Length: 289
Image (tube, rainbow, N blue to C red):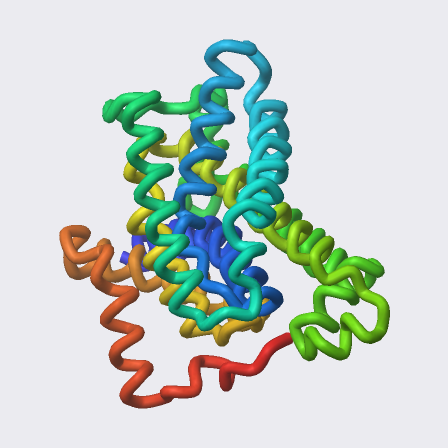
């Protein structure tokens, strides 16, 4: 019985790592641009398709395909920021919500038209690798998710904390006007923010596509859960977002294992309702980090 419990815990942490990569991009965009990007799920979906076609048509190894997808979505993120979001900087939040929702619908339907509705799997070769320790099972795919997620989160934390660009990001998140007066190129930082968010989403999409499937509608439920995670962790609070993502992953895994997987997608929203009642300031007080 305890082995089953710890297996569910492990699965939940791995799922939470995926959510963290996606939600961190949302958190960065909101914290720096003060915009809500409902199309972020489609960044995740398009990144997965880029990796899929890199494997299928370019015949590159899985991890090379992931790098191609991350690079492609980095450029796509910059393009979307410049063409779609830049014109509404400083406008009310509802503008970015409506605009990104429309963009999300357009991208999802374009993917459906070009790629078809049938789910496809990214062949990674990792499924054949299996580990068993202390009674716990972990596949190569899940281990890759765990390791790569930790590496990417640590790289992001280092980038934001110690690089000049990262310090500029934090300055803009604190006070955009003061950052401009200090000589920071705000437009450049906005583009980099979308680039980083796109790369993280692509990495998550590639790993999920290898473990499960890639499909045009895969972004919808993930982006909704990611918004729940950002709300729980606090807008712009990176540590809070990571904590909330792991919590949601554990909740889904344990709830699915001990209650029912049929309600798995409802558990994060139930937690959000309970939190609004008991702790409306969020799990970490809602502050930025």
